[in-house]
Amino acid sequence: MENYTIKEQHISISYAELFKATNGFSEENLVGSGNFGSVYRGMLDDHENDAKVIAVKVFNLQQLGALKSFVTECDVFRNIRHRNLIKILTACSSVDFKGNDFKAMVFEFKTNGSLESWLHPEGNDPFGLKTLKLMQRINIAMDVASALEYLHHHSQVPIIHCDLKPSNILLDDDMTALVSDFGLARFINKSITSSTSSFGIKGTIGYIAPECGMTNNVSTHGDVYSYGILLMELFTGKRPTDGAFKEGITLRTFVKDGLSEGLISTIDECLLSNGVQASDHSQTNINHAKTFECVSLVLRIGLLCTNDLPTERMEIKKVRNELNDIKNKFFWK
Image (tube, rainbow, N blue to C red; front, side, top):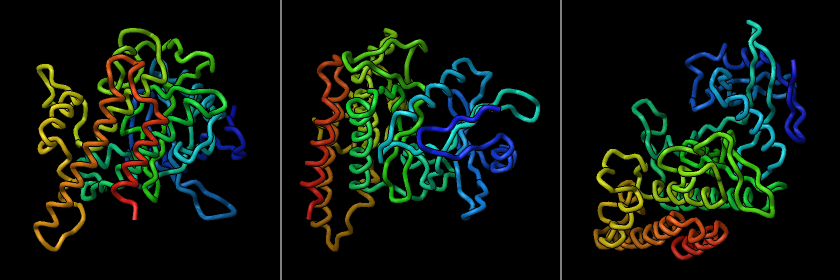
């Protein structure tokens, strides 16, 4: 059995412990699944403290690319540390009770789930009755921008995430956004801005930059494009793959047209129904007007991040600075 310990973390964990923690990787503990595996909620026994709630990402090694994804995530987490990146506890490389290879990563469990679950709750979703307020959305946008700026420019080795989307953004107890899932990530040389991918098309349909779908090259510009799509989804409440987008209409054209028409049908209606409570109708109109103004400024950033030409997209540092200016303008007291 081989156990991986990530960076300065010192816990070591076995397959048997993870099996017990997740009640045999039971269906009732399944919290999500992706291209290369599934995530389970677990309770890890701690002999010194109370039991720790964990998230166990189990890789489906029968899936092509899953093993490479596991190795990539291990490499990435050895090189990153930031308040807006998910914290890993350890990784396990072992065999299951049948002698089959087993690979898993263990993270802190986030009770507020993913951004996806807040924007698009399903019928039995615990977040279905909750909505994100305007300031929360701006804070989340700033958190993700801060994470990208760190990955691209300030980590030990520059990293391209390659799969930025709401399901890969987790929310902490205080609603701080944490970027997760680095299975498709790529390291880049500091002297260049792109890296050749051995996986083929990078990322997820709807979020992937146009140039990444046509070549095997990925870049920081591609991450910025994905961020721009996420930003527009965050404030419109619509996925880029929404069924309403057809016959040449995309999330980007939907936002662009909405900005020219006053955002009436573009803005997420939840932003108007759960805003500041007002005692009279005129005050409500004022609050709505400010909401429209604020969201329009944010959506313009989304459009600039998703320009067709990669070099014409906004720099992520400038994105974070402009979002901070918007926050100060509308929420500073």
